[in-house]
Amino acid sequence: TAEMSKLTENACRDVNIAFANELSILCEKFGIDVWELINLANRHPRINILKPGSGVGGHCIAIDPWFIVSQAKEEAVIIRTARETNDNKPKWVVEKIIQTINEFKKKNNREPVVGCMGIAFKPNIDDLRESPSLDITQDLIQKGYNILVAEPNITSHNSIEITNYNEAIEKADILLFLVAHKEFKSI
Image 1 (cartoon, one colour):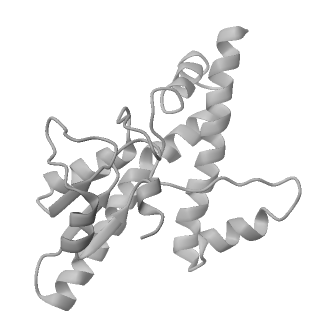
Image 2 (cartoon, helix red, strand yellow; image 1 turned 90 degrees about the vertical axis):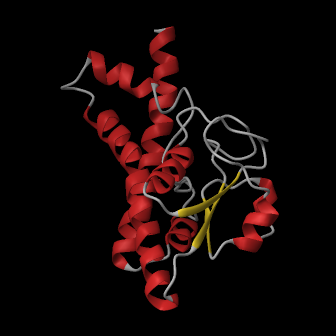
């Protein structure tokens, strides 16, 4: 029961995040501001929709629900679906970024410099485990785009050059705020 309790806590959080992430995808499709929608919905006293993001990272929330699913594949439908929603969100984000890059190229007749702001798995930490922001950034780099990576909570990475966030802001044509670090709040 104690083990299941910990897995349940993380699976519940994952399901709630997946709901917010799915809302962001739906709002994009319907032309609705997801932030306005969530603010309005959260006025209800029993509603507390979380903020959508680029996916779910970290060692617990991104991993623990799969332990439940592995032991009850047929029964853990919502938990599995939430995990799949959150695992697929970075791919959706990359598609949106590529659309923006292509629009920039068409309008400006050149490749943009893209600033990826944050690669940690959540704000104000240096932990990159299971980070969707890191996955997004690495995907864009592998695709050959001109990427500047700003992560104020680390000084170096084994395969990515880290740029000071002020320099990234100055040099980038497109800024991707992938993590809501406190340093980025005033930008």
